[in-house]
Length: 606
Ligand SMILES: O=C(O)CCC(=O)C(=O)O
Ligand SMILES: [Fe+3]
Image (tube, protein in one colour):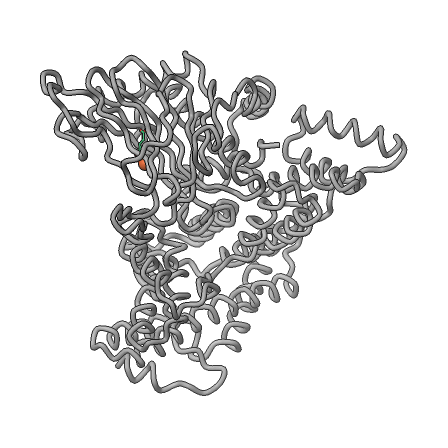
């Protein structure tokens, strides 16, 4: 068929031009730099894709109501196949009524479907809108694409560029495909973390109900049609094999839905226990706002998922005492509905023990930690030094990690320092650390950085979430025999989120500076080296205002802006290791690996 003709022909209401045809035309117009036409066709493609999904959802729901499958046994063929055929007929008729042209015209190739799942059309759209000078639409298309593709460097740059443009409204950074349950969930958790339980309850309830309906929709779409590339088998299976094979596919797909709704766009892994964690958070929040009845209901619902969870059983006991033993406490209907047991993902056997030990054995983040120097003692603003953040043995674990990573030889190579020829620089990111086989040492890295994050957040910005933006374990090693008469620094004076211009007494907040960094932290691991002190200066970069001598467990933290120019004295002997941590308030700039760790910890954070 002539694609162009197909795309342009049918514009009468009710007709849905197949999205793959519109998409092909849109991309063609894009390549021909016909921006107006590209923008129009791509938007129509997205619209058609959404319309098709909506029709399928509606038909599945309608047919499930009209043609319920019988529960009981009978003559099994008639009992099973009769209703199956009726359901199929119902779906066909329903979709036939809703879709023009016929449903079979709306089957796109696997590659196109994948593009839509990855929000690829928005990538083209943003360029087209940009060329058309429709900035706000370009920004929302860019943002929508970036949410699902956070690893896309070009788009990251484009978004930075948009942020700097004066004509762009900040509310244009909108996710046009946002899943309502994710938005509600994140807002809910934010309020929860800020101890605002009334708001937390409202948002988490909304998120739970949205998540359950998203799940239902996803499961409805599982019933077909079976769109698999290799469906053109050489040999047609027999009737029962075909039915069985398709049915297994449907079951797999439904199981997949649980993961799908629990996976944030752009993330690879699902948030563990997404649905049960709602109930856990809600139970805590309801209790905080004095509604023990609802708290107990949530606890009872949670126990349906994890009947032996001791902490929750304990809470349940407490609620029963508070409410009076004869008050009936029942789990929520929606969660007890038959067939919802699939909501629980397969979990490791020792789940309960893991949670319990985590709650009981791990010290509170602030226990034993001391503030050694504050801003005033450091002659500046937003600066602080904490001590005893790590124990000697934790420092040893982390130093061992640098060794193990060195031996693995991957991603952790000593190289010349980017700042001085007299030192070598060894760096290790979280991602690399997780690939090293020493699980305990890698865990120590994650635990140490999360602990620092909590300390810094609660010290500087209580109630306002700080996200990891970048985390790095860095060692600086003096090069033997090249230290005589050294005049340079290990790290020249700089600010962490802007470009210092000592002459103009200015600090330019623009790339290549990491402008979105809000707070910096450096957690030191050792002191058996010479030199290597951290120092702060005035904006002139030469007047030293404060100095910090590294040692195991010492954490220095400061705001990343022009108020905190800093540098590192030359390391003239030995090796100086530290975890450098940067944080941001901006969720878009949150580090992916850490984000995942943060999220999976949410349910155990209270
Ligand atoms: O290691 C230190 O003490 C400071 C490092 C630093 O300022 C940086 O990497 O931006
Ligand atoms: Fe720095």
